[in-house]
Amino acid sequence: MDIGKDTLLWMYERMRLIRQFEERLHEDFAAGKIPGFVHLYAGEEAVAVGACANLRIDDFITSTHRGHGHCIAKGVAIREMMAEIYGKSDGACKGKGGSMHIADVDKGMLGANGIVGGGPPLACGAGLSAKSRGTDQVTLCFFGDGASNQGTTAEAQNLAGIWKLPIVFICENNRYAETTSTDYSVSGRDIAARARGFGMPSVAVDGQDVFSIYEAVREAVARARRGDGPSFIEAQTYRYFGHFEGDTIKYRTKDEEAYFRGRDCIQRFRDAVLEQGLVTEPGLAEIDARTANIIEDAAIFAQQSPLPEPETTLGDVYVSYPAAQLWPFREPALAGR
Ligand SMILES: Cc1ncc(C[n+]2csc(CCOP(=O)(O)OP(=O)(O)O)c2C)c(N)n1
Ligand SMILES: [Mg+2]
Image (cartoon, rainbow, N blue to C red):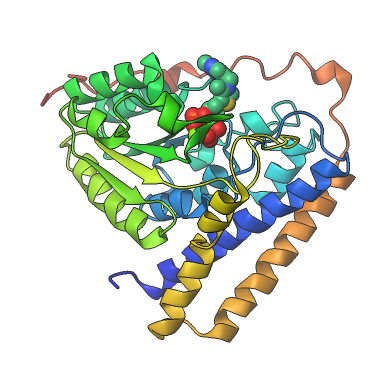
């Protein structure tokens, strides 16, 4: 396995953090402690973690309504995420965004959002910005199978293709868009094949295998950094919980759920690294204990944080950029197309 030990341990820690974060939210939401809508990412951890393991802090990601895993994989602070989801003033967006609007631009996390297909055009903006400024920053664009049917996603792939933008499109095909199965909603069934029509390399990979995701994204990120343009990866995965917390899940069978839980990304990671002697059982147990503490600490932090003051409601609606940040752009913006 061509992955350094530090990266392996980081992958395990991040996947455990996401799983424990989501399981904690599942409990706290059921107990009535969390306001608003919550869409959980548990089951899909390998996608965000395997992908973001290839990034630098100054790279960008765009996200979806199911964004906690993307945030954690890109390094957003767990305490601030938890407080944001609780709607508290110490949250990543001062408690005004909630689960579906966590953003941390300093970490390159350009924001979760509630618009299905909202991320791909945003990724084009980030990609065009990097290209215009002459940096080698890469943008990973996460979106779902449902979003793959949106016009915005097709338009973004086309723009990224003609402008050779440094973007990796990552479709998280978890087989459902709300209650609708991809068997019904995806014409032609093959999401990865569609991207080839835009002239970019595209592969479908096992999204419950962190190593497969890591390898596929590594190649795509290298291509983007070289200036060779976008790539597309369809990650075939599964969400363990309902579409949103409160979903009665009438649209899939228990057998199907058991099948995918039997292919759990964290368990498979453990089996692989232990069998190959890359990490020891106590080494993994130490990470389990540490991540459990981080989640417990974050939940207490969120519960103790005050609610935002009503008079702050209209603050932070628009961003003011100092003129110096906007100009000069490096010209020509699209040289080398
Ligand atoms: C433009 C738009 N249309 C419809 C919705 C309602 N909606 C919210 S999530 C969702 C399903 C998205 O499915 P997918 O892209 O596969 O993501 P997943 O929830 O499976 O992660 C829909 C239809 C929306 N938020 N935005
Ligand atoms: Mg889906």
